[in-house]
Image (cartoon, rainbow, N blue to C red; front, side):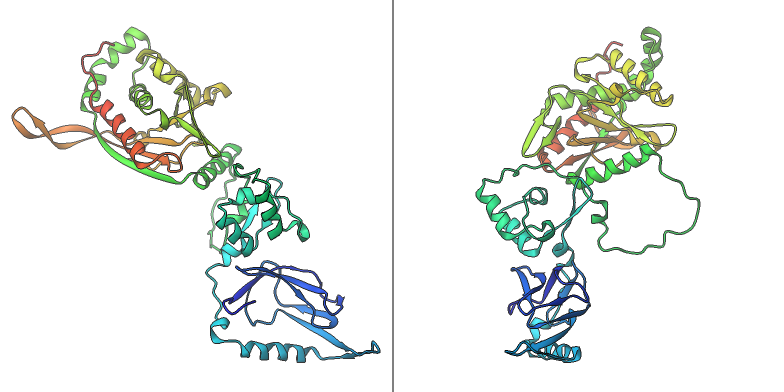
Amino acid sequence: MGESITEGTIINWLVSEGDTFEEGDVILEVATDKVDNEVPAPASGTLVKTLFQAKDVVPVGEVMAILEVSEVSNASTKKSVPSSAVETSQKIEKDKRPRATKLASVANTQFVSSPLGTSDGASLFFSPLIIEIAKTHHISYEELARIPATGNEGRLRKSDVFQYIDDGRPFQFAQPIQQDPTAYRIPQLKFDKGKGKVIEMDRMRQMIADHMVYSKHTSPHVTAYVEADLTNMVNWRNANKVAFQEKHGERLTFTPLFVEAVAKAVKDFPNINASVDGSNIIVKEDINIGMATALPSGNLIVPVVKNADSKDLKTIAANVNELAGKARENKLGADDIKGSTFTISNVGTFGSVMGTPIINQPEVAILALGIIKKRPEVIETENGDEIAIRSMMYLSLSFDHRVVDGFLGGSFVRRVADYFEQFDTKREI
């Protein structure tokens, strides 16, 4: 394998236990981080027992199998050699190796195995050599999975990858493929899950779970936090909520005010209103604000206020109340939850000070609004600094760091806070 190699990965056994082979026949294939190797039989014989299986990582010098071999004379007569002699010979070779090559490193075990689920449920295996080539040429796993493979049992060979590169990498911007959920359970730990009432996930909860795992796997999440003084907004809403309902026939909760301010901020920073398509960023023309809403069953759903930037407060309030009512009665239709381009989650409804929300794919950001809490704050007045009771809120924006950097994310959430703080207390209802 080479002086610097301390371990190898068995790719495949080409001979099964009990099978016979001839001298020079390939018994197995072994991969290292340098090269893939075909291991030929040193003599004719029979494979008695394999001590490691495909995908196992084996230290250099370790006995991998017990063979019963035979020496062949010119007259083609065979003389049996005890398997113990073969094992002894292998151990002697092991002892001759430099000490450094005997040390087995397990640091790359998970990386070497590199299982990748496919849409049909199969699992792909990339050898360390293939992975090294992919890293050198910046080829993703999703792209590797689409390269035509000519190796045994559909295994990708070095020649396949270089041929693909020569062909111009037609799948360079491939989208992520459906992952095998077992690929994320490395190592396979045995947890004591305890005893208790077993509740089977309903279909919606399973979909939510899949969506959340997919989002965390797809988008590198970063969260930015700001604090906002909502005293002016709170005072205006408390003073006008009764009159608003009498005039427009709609309840005035805080949600329409939040949606209105967020839509204005999205208009100021249009790149936050986007999704990712391979190496392209799609900046949406419509500003549709999704509202993460709890259902009576405890599940979550995201009804959508369409074109929120072009609607007045009365219309937004009507949309919010209608959608909230449908959610409570489990009457939301497909159109009610379709087309969201940016989502808000009012975690303050449940008493949370702040949250770190998971992005609602395929969006690139989501805003969590904490509880509005009164507390003493130092404020600047005409008479200097004073301590006053103010209504404060924490805002937290989780964003996809593939396309949203800290400047855009931080500037956007600060702009939302500014709209909250600069609320016009003299506005008409």
